[in-house]
Image (tube, rainbow, N blue to C red; front, side, top):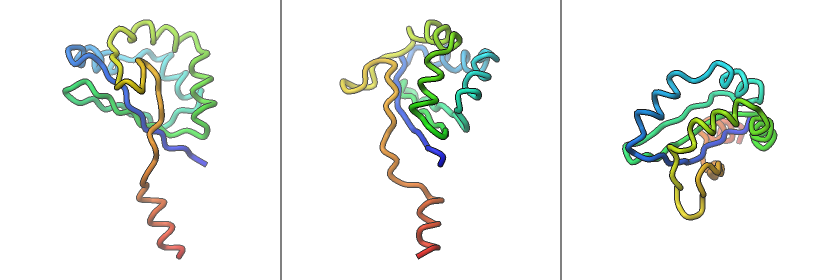
Length: 116
């Protein structure tokens, strides 16, 4: 079953252009690793305050995240990007991806109503 994962991160608002540019020219080996580790439909959004919203789909987020964390390219990308990040809030330290509660899904809700 596909897991839909949404999470928050924060970057320094003065670094938004750097963040966006680095993702526009993301390393091909990073794209390969993300795909091979099981990430699908992965998107990042940023607002002017530096709040980042990430969304991805995967079969097993814990396993995919663990595989990704063990790759050399992830360690290199983190070293390249880490200085851009700030804490989201006091509950989420810098760089910690904590999935948000999945509260609603139109497809699932529609299917549940249709089958009732």
